[in-house]
Image 1 (cartoon, one colour):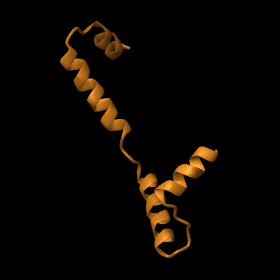
Image 2 (tube, helix red, strand yellow; image 1 turned 180 degrees about the horizontal axis):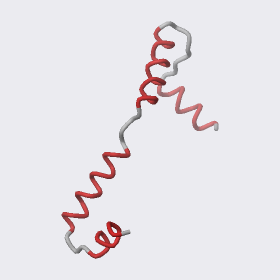
Image 3 (cartoon, one colour; image 1 turned 30 degrees about the horizontal axis):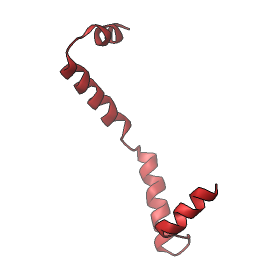
Image 4 (cartoon, helix red, strand yellow; image 1 turned 135 degrees about the vertical axis):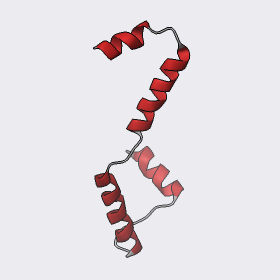
Length: 65
């Protein structure tokens, strides 16, 4: 709560921008589990075990949903 109060009371835009950048950076990180899933799917694709789509095919499928 103290941190929230400090953020609300600050008038320095630079402080708020720095805090925002730190929070956004933290949210953008992938977990170790995310990397394992990505690696597994990539390997499956390289072995020809998964279907891939062109950008146009992907857009069409998304628009149908």
